[in-house]
Image (tube, rainbow, N blue to C red; front, side):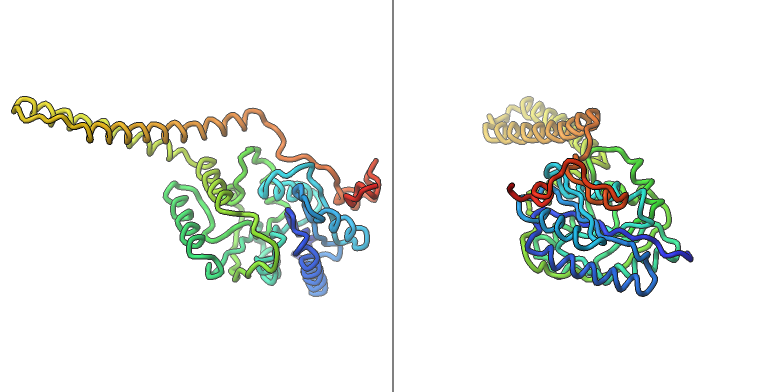
Amino acid sequence: MSETPLLTVVVPCYNEEEVLEDTMEKLHNLLEELVNEKLVHPKSNLLFVDDGSCDKTWSMIAKESVHHPWIKGLKLARNVGHQKALIAGLEKVAEVADCAISIDADLQDDIKAIKEFLVKFHEGYDIVYGVRRRRTTDTFFKRSTALGFYRCMNKLGIELIYNHADFRLMSKRALTELRRYKEKNLFLRGIIPLIGLNTAEVFYDRKERLAGESKYPLKKMLSFAFDGITSFSVKPIRFITYIGFFLFLLSGFAFLYAFVQKLLGSADSGWTSIIVSLWFLGGLNLIGIGVVGEYIGKIFTEVKARPHYGVDIDLYTSSLTGEKSEGIEPAVLFNEEK
């Protein structure tokens, strides 16, 4: 590839005021280095997507974008979650950038790997995955549950890149293909491998978070994992069907055993066994109904075809076209009181 590509680094943000200044500085320094090495175009930029933050995140983005042309901002109308905020940024840059790199605002993912991403891009790869070498920075619980999640997804036939999150490079071609996937239940780690194209992996070591709190507590992690499973596989329903057949056969053997005992005159009234059986079958029924309900709920969400997000302020398109944000006063732009 002879011409230097225009790169946009997409950074989803939610209440990141504690780390944002440091993040902007480090990413800007990296951009300058990449431009000097002629790996990217001089007009390459950073797009910070504010996912309905409650702190000063948007104010910081907007103010920096006024003084520094390489900083762009996209403010969503409300909090829609990490995956939808990320897709908002990727869709925004798809028609402009030659390639886009997504990275979380806390910069736990090593930005030094971005140079290797671009080397792979220049070699002709459309998608470059950032893959963690090891998970030593995670707690034992998080490490073991994460590994269990990957194994479970592989068993269900869902193609995932092992130890890869959302730190990746995508070419314009890959971004165009991604926009064809219209599902509302977004699980990008599963969707991206479906695109195909030429892919490569770059390995790196994940760092400790410098400040702020993780935006993925246990509850969100479990929800995210369950969304991933139910968005790509019907095997949980099939598994419950298998259990149903197994219990049906088991109950047949139990009936035959009870019938023989009755004929032999040695039948005992088994209150405990009846209660245990009722609780077991009742719990199994509730689990089955719950899993089926999850799939029906996803169908309900898909058929409504609601948009993933709403945009409040767009400082990306306006900065590229030279237009001012219509009807937006400075106080509103910076989230300040008039």
